[in-house]
Image 1 (cartoon, helix red, strand yellow):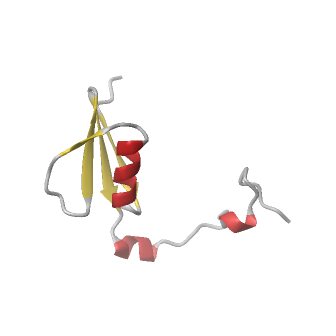
Image 2 (image 1 turned 180 degrees about the vertical axis):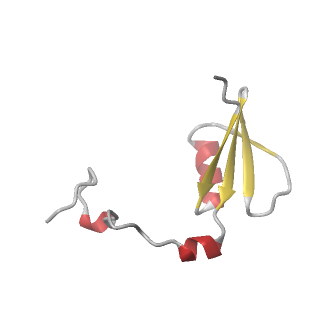
Length: 80
């Protein structure tokens, strides 16, 4: 199977655009997509970042297994 592209849904598009550019060295593809979409070229692969709309973020509720990071140790294990 040859995967030519992928999309990641992100909360903070500008920060994630900077991260993928600076840390992974991916080349942003120019385009006028406002503040909702950014594509990167990575050799023969394309990565798209899509901003999660604010109304969707506001409507999300954590599931019963959710443990806030402040209540977990660094490995993500809940402290009693």
